[in-house]
Length: 364
Image 1 (cartoon, helix red, strand yellow):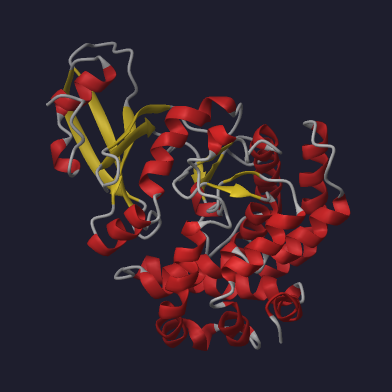
Image 2 (tube, one colour):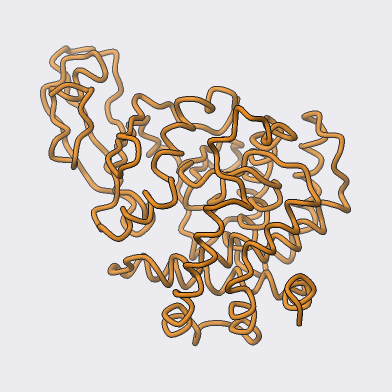
């Protein structure tokens, strides 16, 4: 099979296909699906490689990402342009980031469809953190510093015409999500409402239909950069304790807008609330200091703090609703992830006076 053909499923990735890709003679593959319930938009596989040569130059295994087996999830990925965005990110932008990205052997898509394949280095030597467990303070510090590196690369550049193919956070994709959330609200509250803290249901009800308005307020007050938009712990892989190594995955939701979106999403959803509260100030200071060291001079710590508070009314709430109200959550792990998102993100919003801020933006 030629590597020019995108496989329709993992069964179509055979030794010949992989040999052509890696320019090595491979005699046998061993395939194991990994990350069930984590890669909601994609199916992920670890593929072990057996070579014909005794001492091959290639890797002993790779990771292959294909579109989700669930048609509903595939359709959402196409509608939001997520599959195409990730492939283009790896092919066109990734080499500008000096830290935090995997080695990519192949990233290809049939434009406008869900037919894509990404083959990357196997990072199973790194640690994946269960979002329900959450990051440690040290892991959060590493993640915040890597995030600042990524944001600094495109700080103030994201509105350049060369990046216009990336959806912005006040454009049609957000309008689509905003409209979809109104339809998802009853399903979301029926499934996850009982788990919400006091005030949580009211936040979600007020937020529904106003996601775009919140984004517009934040976008008008702050410099833009490239935003990951799903910067949570299960898309991060960490080195051993004491190491500052970390790799960021799943660049399918990239957008253009203020960097505080990613920071609020990360800390609001990927830390146990009490731990977040205890370390939030120092983590914001670390992010700001790293930006400054990397040459960002037009952004004060005070502006970051306000943006961060507003960011708790952005992607975390929307993603929790989108996952909980619109995705196929047939496996227990996926439902647990949605519950964690729904409760943590709304608690972070409440901690930052979210209802009052929301009422100021959309009217009481």
